[in-house]
Image: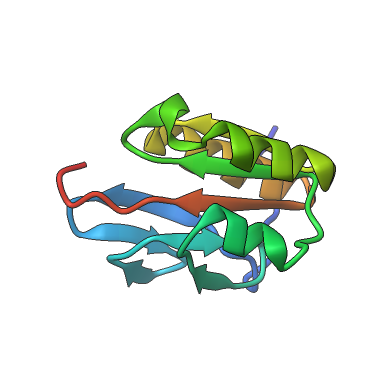
Length: 117
């Protein structure tokens, strides 16, 4: 029995990450990005991102700093917008985003580029 989820070709799938950047749906990004199921944007700061009032349930935050990447104020701002932030290392963030996106959840992933990853 095949249990591989069907993911539309228009969906943004995180394929890999490393010193060269992030590979997302066959495109490489060597900078901080926000990955949505249907597009990728540059990422500057969490307050600036949240000010756009994204329509999300879960925001996956991945960096080489893991749990320490999101400060208290950022978490409070997200909580006020009813967005759950899950901070984790890059590998876990990429996998978690892909699973939630495949399930059709309202999710985005902030990926922090570190050329030493």
